[in-house]
Length: 422
Image 1 (cartoon, rainbow, N blue to C red):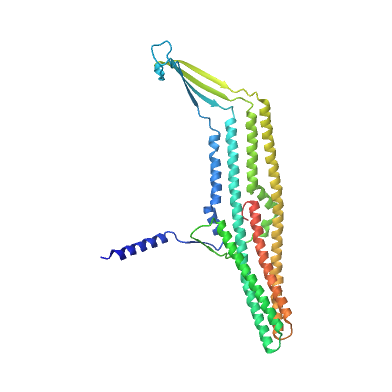
Image 2: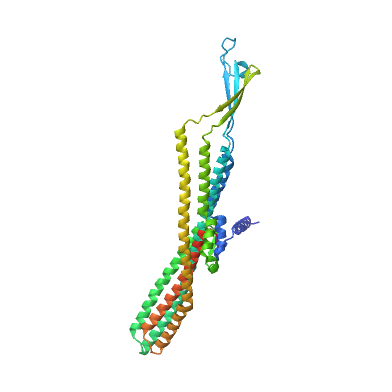
């Protein structure tokens, strides 16, 4: 019997089982998986949902009756004129009065309080939805930026390989006596500059990955795959400005929160106006003498709303709050409509730029570079023409990547404004 190796094996198996219980989760590649993960696990969005649920839980208590009051009066506890001493037992003193009362708000006040709380719950729900849309937009933007960085890195590597080929041609021509040393040096300087740009792009890609992990709540045991492809763009028919404005008015969460705030202000104004009428307090009071109830009393009590100046000031405050809510909504509507027009115009420009670059500028730049390289190898063109053609190709590729990235950014911003995906 050798217990030490057996115990060690058991510990290793237990450790392996514990490790297998929490496998690494791989997400990413496509933005939909990132959005699904963030919706289910992001702590900020979970907090917004909890706040909305808490606001909804306040609706029922807002319209409930206040708790009844119980009052007990012990009378003649010293037993004056009796052959007895001080006592606190109801059956051994002069008398005991029990009063049970219930406050009853004026007709309609409870319903209005419930409606005010309901409007607050709707506003909290709209804020939660706005928080999610904002988070989803940031995830979409970061995903698009990361994808743009990766495509830019791929193009930069291709451009660098091409420039190294040009530098090799320049060195070969210089070694053969057909070229100048200046051409080789310029090519090497261009390579160093392009390597510097490549390092910066790689750094930006790493930063984008870190931002994405932060947007997901910095989850543990989660590995992020690099973006594989951009989202499909909507057809041009869905970019009709009138249709987008209608969807914005119906689905924008900020406007929904403003609407709920207006409803709450209206119900709050009506509730303040109901304070012109008194609340009622009803009660019943049995009186105990020794071991029996000797008499019953009924109570009726109302408050008298005589403080007119105070009440008018409250009504004025409620009217101003309602006016402010309506003006704020109009201001937010004007702002969002202006932003929508700007984002749609930006998306249309990005569409046109991509079309111009992909069908015209980029093929022409590739042809120019191939022609310049062939002419330089044969000694019919100088090195400056090759560098210029190569820079044109780099610029065309950069414009194409930028246009596609701008399309994704403008699309995400439009979806944020209209409150839903296109």
